[in-house]
Each structure stands twice: as C-alpha cells, then as structure tokens.
Image (cartoon, rainbow, N blue to C red):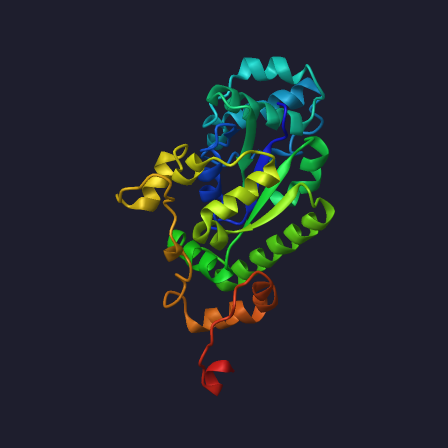
Length: 285
C-alpha cells in the first residue's frame, strides 16, 4: 500500500470504535469493525516464523481466532504472499489487514486494538508511514462505562486508574519519540467538536477531510446504536455531548474520590477537572 497503516489505540470504552466509525466513512480507509488483536495475542508466541513449522502453527492459530476470522482471510493467498517477503510477525499480521482493505476497495488499511500502544516501537519499526491515533477519555466516565459493560469485573476503581495512567504515560512517551506519527485524541473533543477534530485527524493522517465522514456512512451499525432510532440530518454527526459526565450519580463518592486523588494531576493535564467531594472526616478516613 502506498501509505502506511492506521492503528487506533487506547483503553476499552475510550472511543476507539467511534473514531473507527468516522475514519472508515472516508473513501480511502478500511479498518475492521472488530479489533483483530493479532499483536496482543500472537506476537512472538510461535518462535521464528522463518521456520515453516512455526509459521504454520501461528497461521493455524490465527485462522481459528474469531477476531481474525471476521477478516475473511484467504489462507492460500496468505501462505503464498508471506514467503515473498521477510518472514516476520509484523508482515504476517499486515497481510490480513491489507487483504481486508483490498476487498473493501480501499487503498489504506488499519486496525483498532486496545492497548496497542504497548507495541508502538515494534509497529513503527515494521511499518513505514504508520500513524497511530491514541484515544483518551475522562477516567471517571471510562470507569462508569466499563462498569455498565462488565458489572462483575475485577479491580474496580483501583484497576481502572492503574490502566488509565499506564496508557496515558505510554502515549506521552510515544508522542515525544514519534511526534509526526503518534497523536492523542480526546474522546470528548471528538464528540463535542466532531468536524474540527476530524479535520485535524485527517491532516495528521495525510488525508483530505470529507463531510461524509460526519454521518458515519461506513459504519451504519455503530451509527444506529448511537442514534437510538433518531433521524440524522445531512452533515450531522450521530455523536452527542450527552456521553460526557455520565459518571455523575453512577459511581460511589468513595470511588470518585479515589480516582481523582490518584489520577488528578494527569486528569487536569487533559482538561478533566475533579468534582468536589463532600465527605465527613470519618468518611475521609
């Protein structure tokens, strides 16, 4: 492909799927609706892929993974093309995405994968022209959204804050090291100022912004979930600022205080001001 791939990273419930829905509504960009997670689960797990047996074991595992099956891969084509270049994990993973983009009739491939930022150095070394968009969301809203999706999840507020800080610190490190290839985008900016934010993202990607992106025509299922049956006027975006501040009244004051105390400095750096918490002295203790 003439231009490098586009990866969307960040934590779960941070807006990766919404960013993907906007981007795939561009005529040049193909990103699967399901995160492939190939780097997360398969990178380095099968030894040196230049050995035929290792390659076949890895390919077989990939072909049995539901997120990869979503790409509708052609195993024979992958086998044929893999041995025409460097026998690496990065090349193998790229073939799945390139073939998907070609079937979509688009010249640029990509993927959305949670915490893909852990592999940024390997990705940049492997893919010339790669661009990574890192989605960031208010940790309080992200925590509330995670609870709604996984009410019995482990770790609660402690685990949520630890993951948020870990992801943020990786993002800041990568922006310093790869300033032209790595971009942090706030979920709140994307949904409150979609056109301005997408124009900025398109400049970063080297693509021309089109107004069709705002309507999410390339991701109708996600668009319809956001609309809840409402009609969408031409040039209108289905996202709403109602998604901001939903944590209020939905997480406990103790958890709110904990999140703001542990992540307050980073929260303020990204425009997330702490809410006042009224505790008695025994409650604080």
